[in-house]
Length: 504
Image 1 (cartoon, rainbow, N blue to C red):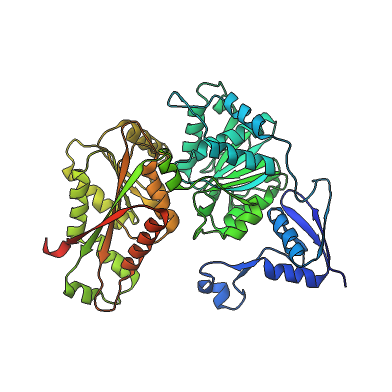
Image 2 (cartoon, rainbow, N blue to C red):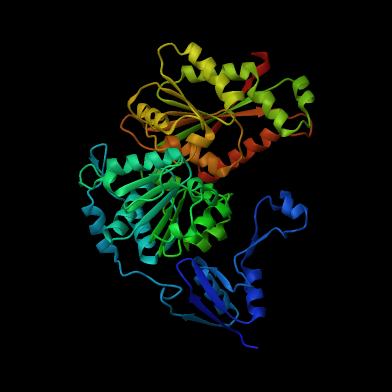
């Protein structure tokens, strides 16, 4: 029995592990994890799945390239012999020849502009770009407002100038259009023709093109889209934006098929409570590099300050007794259907100056109601309504109207406007529906943190509902307490304002 492990790179997605079975089983135990909510899946309930995701395949003797370093460290910790064997794809762990000064010169040569103004890259942006290109793989933690799309542009341009084909995946159609629009903006002074180089894929559009850079939603590239595995082999690099938004199978199935993509880079604003487990993302994209925190960027005056006003609606004892121990769905129906609560939202929105973003979770039950209430009372004030059914071109048009308009009110479903949408001129944000998702909260706040010429801060109005009685705490109050934990952890100052809703 030998304690030797030989790691060979099969392609740019997979490693072959040559070792005795006992060692592979030990590796399997070390690199398996349980997905959040596994106990609620039919497979687990029917006892056909143990709830674990296994990154090491003992039977096939393979794993993802991204955890090569972790496997080596595991062997070192147990004094096992670990050998990296070269192959036609190189060694399991490699570094490119790019240098930091060379990269700085290249980025400066791109002459990036936004709204006609030269973009000055920050030190943390150069660091993130360098780590991604130097190591071929990187999972980059880049908070909202840190210039993520400019980083993606610089990485993509470097790879394209090296005659490589690049695939960029984003979670929504809105982000496909926004990313292309940003690229056009960045290229306005450097004569790089976006139309000649960028191919977008969504909603049944053609998948093939001779262009060097593809942008698509990952939904458009799923197996059900009838795209053969061979199609993914054309790419030398894959970049995935907002990786936390996709489920493990959505992300991994596509990244794994890019067997010739030596460069694999993932971007996210947060890994906490991600839909895809952190260890799975590391296995696909390699080690984590943190760009900067939101608080650090605020202290450097690169993001707006934020004022958080938590508005807590108080209800009568009779109401609290009636809803005591009610299920979550019925509690939500009560909250979003409460006439006085919705009129309060309307009155608050119309009282605010500057551009206001109102986020909701339920379109027909809540969004439609709020849109009607606010539109009927807004007079000449612009009111826009955005949700999953809004055509991509209309979403992009509304985004541009916000950037140029004043005292605009936008009602948007959280799924559309909480993630990735680049809007600088937001002065107020309102959370009208409860959520405890760290990622959704931080992403939603990020809509207002971007700097603009006429804005020094953003005000967040977080609406919460206190239906507690005795020792009973209602579902959405629990969500509110989790949001307060997020605000404290992020270093955001906040105040709490009680509103006796039923006696107003």
